[in-house]
Image 1 (tube, rainbow, N blue to C red):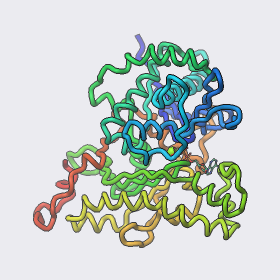
Image 2 (image 1 turned 90 degrees about the horizontal axis):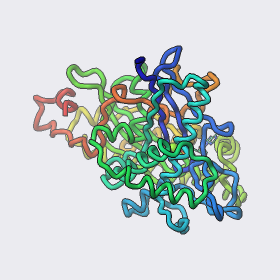
Image 3 (image 1 turned 60 degrees about the vertical axis):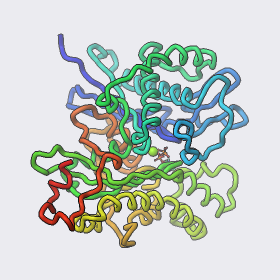
Image 4 (image 1 turned 180 degrees about the vertical axis):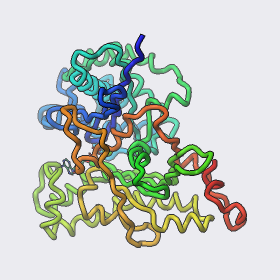
Length: 436
Ligand SMILES: Nc1ncnc2c1ncn2[C@@H]1O[C@H](COP(=O)(O)OP(=O)(O)OP(=O)(O)O)[C@@H](O)[C@H]1O
Ligand SMILES: [Mg+2]
């Protein structure tokens, strides 16, 4: 029997839009990753629309007059499960009768898995024999560190996968009554426990996934870095060290601090709209921010409050990092010149790049770390993904990797404070610090 050809879906389930990359490990010309396109765009709306009888997924056209709209379901699940309203700033509109927010997330993910499979089927044509498909979904690092959030998002991933395996593609619109019946049928299946090491196959942190590509790249040297992901509704900042070249230590990504703040490009759009008295639908400004800010001084001035809020994620992640490195002179010095990766929609706005390339402690400028174009990432029609789209897709691209190709990643909670180097001068050696 010939070995299976593996295809892996990386699903970046975003609060406003989701992105999917599938990786074909057995592609004829060598391993290749493909960005899934739906209705001409790789940004697949994450919101759920509900009419009198149906759920509609992936739809950003319907208005609140036509249906009930649930935005940011992912963050609403987090707020409910962790009992922490800071995760979700949307309206607490009542959910469809008989469903909780977790059910809505399961259905959305089933829809995204279906979109991934549809793209894989289109790509493979009739060559489907011996194919095995798997998936990994991304969650903010803060979710990964909270046992309740981790188990809830694991259940979301496994239930949606089992729905896809036994019920096939989710066809949107989906009858509400049918959704209720199927969710009930697959509730129990996902409640069996799985070993810790398998959880990583289902769930990975978005921060670690986003940095998979820089981690692989020989052009990126070992050392301390920050990554700031400015999305539509959230900004995630994480500070980490890439360590690949120590003898006897597996290559790893060690995260010192990771913080999410519920502010992002939607807030930028809101203040720009207000500064221009546009009122109404400020989200119509999506994608136009850079050109408006370049030409309009009023919009620039209005941006300052949001700049500060976005910077707050970075500042807080730095405080957590500093708590870990405070006792090590060498480590503190190394962080003076850390470099910053900026991804997500905000990375296309130069004012925001300026904002997040300032050291949160020393207030001195930092260098931007370049995001190189991977040569194995393409659209299904073979076209390469252009450089200006890369900041949107690095998370899904990283998630499309399986098993051994993923570096060992230590989350901030797993990272012990560094030993007091003033007391341990003799041990002042990076091998000692990172051997744990
Ligand atoms: N060409 C573009 N097309 C669409 N959005 C753009 C473009 N350029 C900048 N943007 C901004 O990027 C934002 C989306 O960024 P991104 O895809 O990183 O967010 P997200 O992942 O959906 O959100 P989150 O990370 O909060 O879940 C849009 O809201 C818009 O403001
Ligand atoms: Mg995002």
